Length: 239
Length: 244
Image (cartoon, rainbow over all chains, first blue to last red; front, side, top):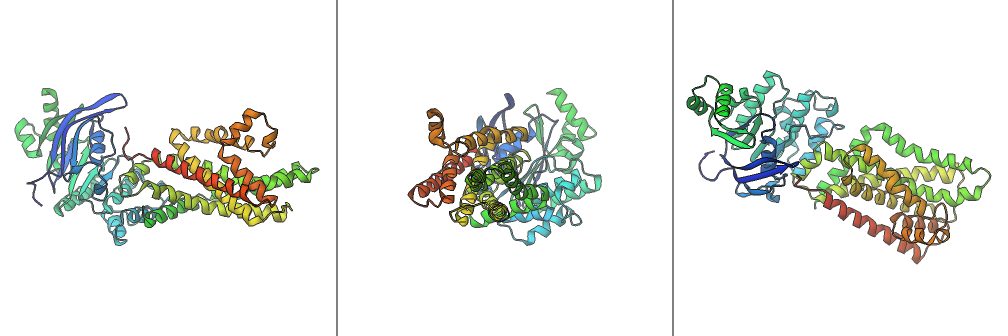
């Protein structure tokens, strides 16, 4: 898919107050289609709030969020946007397969998708295990599998690789790129700069403001830093 | 609205409950045991047991479903599954009706078992039809469920949700006419009881057990039905697609 034309996500002057605190003072950004865009920044920088606004579950004070050309949260987007929260949001007292069966019915996804997504997130062995008895990483993958069921055009993933071992992390990032190659747009947040190099595009966030919007290569070139962590620190300290 | 999503939700709720064997044992086992206890407490006064017993058969489902639903709904909120569902193509009513169907089935089982023990083993006497007591019991369960669903929105923690039982359920039980006939209560209390859903649920049960099946019972049933509908609509308004 090309990155030209209408962006997958367009945010204009977004202002959000959460819990009495101004989390996003007014930010604007565009996310291109068919790309893996990383949303990077320290914890508390507003990543989750921004993602919630894009999915349409966040009450916003001001600004516009358009997803696939429609206002975020529009009913017709509910089938086209997949969202995975930081804490796994699946039923702990059901097995992985039972969870997926339920959400597949809600999304009207084909039953074959259940086994496909179980394979994608590498939970074949645990498919019939109750989610509550899974490890933290397995639980998050069960949650991710749910979001993949409906083959959404846009996937918003909030820190999907936290607590995963390096092999799984690499496998998941490969999955993300495969999905993007198939035309999906991914917005993936992380507070680990190490993951930035795996993204096609980067949005660096700090205290609710965008510090940089660029590609990993460009970021290194501009800052003259040797790695992305250093580049981010350089940018943050200048800002 | 979609039957597929409603039924899928009902099946999911039942599946969750099935995994929690102890809750099932408590929901099904406690009412018959309490009724037996009640019978022996009023050993010398069989007419008290006969008067209050059938009504209790119908009130247990109201109480258990109120508690079970408020906790279940609170869990949906705190674990993020509600937020996930709200970001999916699921009508709010599908979720509420799904819960309703699942808990109505459990309530039917509970009321059936409790009636079997009460009218069989415990020798509870009623002049009215037992099937009507069971039907009304299921209606009460759905009433308890819809009230629990709505009120759970106002609980932040499970501790609070559990306290809603004595706060919202017990006063209704006290004022429904079960302990003291309503026309013998102080006038202000009688007026308050006119506005409580359980008053009508109890009145219907009392009439069913004395075989007083007529327009008043139909009116009671209608009021209970209307309360269920109002609580479900109010409950739907507490399910927000967007949150702060």
